[in-house]
Each structure stands twice: as C-alpha cells, then as structure tokens.
Length: 143
Image (tube, rainbow, N blue to C red; front, top):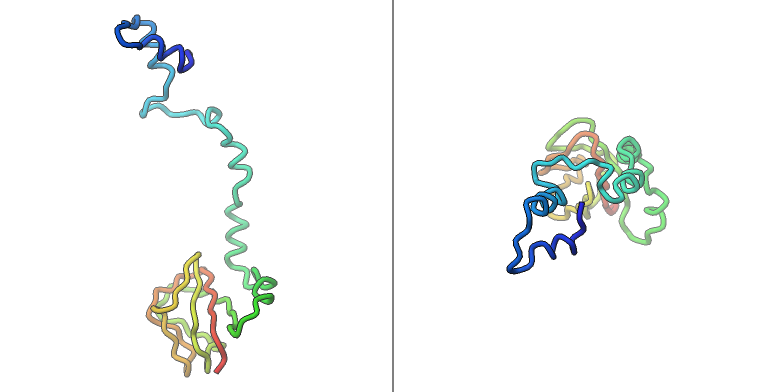
C-alpha cells in the first residue's frame, strides 16, 4: 500500500497513472462498503477498555445513595430526594413531598423546573411521563 505522497505524485496534472498505480490507489483506502477490521481502528481497544461498564452504570442508576456525600456538602435550602419509580406512570406519589415546595427535578442529565407539578397535600408529582427504574432527584424545600 502506497503512502499519500507517493499516490499524489502518480496523479499530478498532465500525468497518466498506470493501471497498477490506479489499483494501488483504490486499495489504499476503505470503500464505504468495506468492513473495517477492529484491529485497524486506532486506539479502539484502549478506548473500549476505558469506557464505563454497562452493568456498573445500571447499579449506579438504581443506587439511592449515589452521590449522597456530594449532596451533603451542598449548602442550600433545598433538600434532595432520590426517587425510583417501579413502573411507568404519569403521576408519582411520594410521601416525603407532602407539605413541601417543588424546586426542580433532575433526571438523566436534565433538569425540569417548569413542567412537573407537585400537589403538596398528597405529595403527588404529575404532568410527566415518569419511567420505571430511572432515578429522579427531587429538589424541594420544606414548608
């Protein structure tokens, strides 16, 4: 396989590459229909070895104490409550949210401050499609 500088010299203006040079050029690149062997992808093994393990992430997502040490260090009037619905639902009743004010809901890297509603009498969150086995962090203040 020829390197790029050699290939460029074969195709200079006014030159006519030979059939073998043209074929060499074609064999020097991956065609869109070619399957690229994993061993040919630079740093693939290293990158795969450094990725987060799916099972470990799954355990972390359902760990009610995940990041508790970080939440404990935050100086704020807000209280944090991790919630894990066990089924898909549009309303989620959480006793700890009775007599509170909802400030925000964090989930999957997003923060909702306007859509999800709280009934402070029943502690019911509504106006959202809560997903089973997804961690929601509720930020609230006690009344």
